[in-house]
Length: 379
Image 1 (cartoon, rainbow, N blue to C red):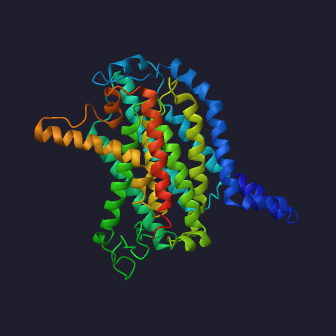
Image 2 (tube, rainbow, N blue to C red):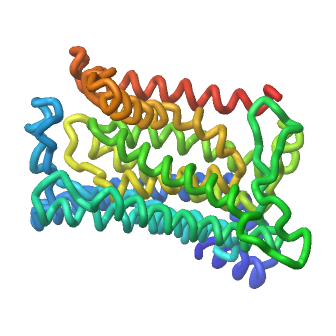
Image 3 (cartoon, rainbow, N blue to C red):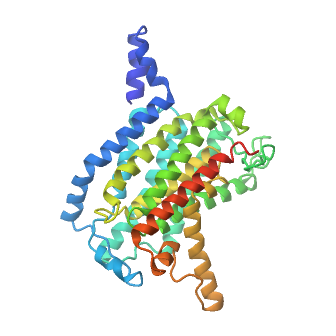
């Protein structure tokens, strides 16, 4: 809204006011959105914590987890509402709202956040660490991911989105995930199926991976800051013709406004980390982890760096794989590979302190993110 007011409307009224030109630049508005989100989160945090305590919106710790985590019982949860609000409002203020891709990103964050919100509410009412059933939760995630995929396909038909897949290290390998659609008059579901399945895997996998990582104070949100920062850079260079040409990556002019959305998400996450660092005053809950994971996955799909997301969110991938390996191996051999899954609990049971696990995982997340950025030129 501020973009439309300060640049479009006021520039028409005062065409000689060259200072208003600064609002045209994505980099400037990204910085403004990040700062706005950070300030909002810092200001609203104490108020939200008081309200959550007042309504007894408290975390219930699973009994099978590390015993020292039981002291965290009663900590206010559903702090993800703060993250979502502090991301959405600056995005509204600083982006060009006529860009449909902005609405896809916002819709993904709010939609996955709503699923997490329902899950958290059920946990609080039951006073147990069990919310939506796995089947219902997965069904809702698949339905939302399918709606996002359908929206992107609609934008593709209008020339506002590409379905070519960028493969790291191979600049000439860009398979189209939509087969023969739009080449003729007849449209078939099978033409869209590869793209739909791919979006399902990326979005559902991303949202659940962040959710699994959210088990220690500051762990998930710190990794989100790193991954979100890398996505902010990737989104900007993808939208910039000169940078995209130099790096030999698919150029998409329309994704530039999503840089502001990513910047707002990073700012909001930093503000939340202020209250979530050890010892945490506030937990994000599923409303936070699912919304952040869904948003990260959606941005990766839009800017066509879905495969690179494996490196960008390397910690999230490892946490998710640890659970899959643990469950599969136990079903087959009745033995455990890790002392406990997700992976961060394994290191806790090895004797690492919670703070040591978190900081070392942050370092690993930064290494993964830096590696993902270096692959842009290794083609």
